[in-house]
Amino acid sequence: MEIKQATINDTFTLPCGAVLSNRLVKAAMTEGLADRRNHATQQHQTLYRKWSRSGAALLLTGNIQVDRRYMERPGNIAIDGKQPKSALIALTQLAAAGVESNNHFWAQISHAGRQTPVTISRESVGPSNVGSRLSDYFGPPRALGSAEILEIIERFVHAAKIVQDCGFTGLQIHAAHGYLINQFLSPDVNTRTDEWGGSLKNRARILLETTSRVRSVVGDSYPISVKLNVADFHKGGFVAEEAVQLAKWLSDRKVDLLELSGGTAEEPSMFLANRDHLNEERSTPIKSSTIAKEAYFLDYARQIRAVTSVP
Ligand SMILES: Cc1cc2nc3c(=O)[nH]c(=O)nc-3n(C[C@H](O)[C@H](O)[C@H](O)COP(=O)(O)O)c2cc1C
Image (tube, rainbow, N blue to C red):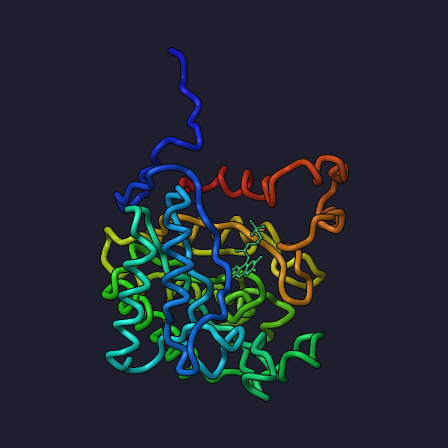
């Protein structure tokens, strides 16, 4: 029997049952368009209405922050605490603009942790007090207490419920690019000795707990994605073997879509065209010509694909 190769135009059914009308996705791109109260604006609506007409089956918002004290940049949307009616109306209007062509529109939720610019907060927070090398840009982090970590998980849950109520058709938990959840995963940044640090299971606890808690409030039929680093691409950071293990654990938590990326603000692999440094982690070097030709993180995606059925 001849097996038909899927094309980019074919529909795709996610594990939760939601159907994407094709395989084109617009990844998260921070907009910086929120107003001074960190609410969505008309400019967001204009942008996502236009992207909705692009034909992509799935659009992701830029990172929406779960704590305005620790944002990725001024102009992020923040959903924290009780939202005034005007904020909920603005989010609902944004969600409506982004699904105008009946495409999916998912909200990416995030906490910047130690990658909070000093212009937002002189002191940042992180799993430990290990500061970024980019200390002119990011303030020194204070190590979070256990109660604060539990509170941050609840902040993700709160934001998840609000984006669902406002009409976003799914959500993505940002666990990549050196932001807070990624910081917990990275052994060089997370030097804790309690249940949130040490073994991979402990370092991954914040992500796994967040994912499970979010799933419990949004229900089984609502799409949840996790954006995960395949590696941090610096010595002592989160590595590919750990990403493979983590992908297995995430699939047990009913994740619908894993987006694989890599790097941090210190090592921005996600933006580098020359990926020769990736060879530091491999026994058989990949030829630069191959790296140049291949899609981003394709080799790592294959390793993860081999151990999980999560798209
Ligand atoms: C202008 C710009 C803004 C971005 N903002 C975000 C963001 O808010 N959240 C995020 O996860 N990634 C963000 N990214 C990264 C992209 O989503 C994507 O991960 C990156 O371009 C590399 O692609 P790759 O991850 O497939 O390698 C941004 C990229 C660009 C170019």
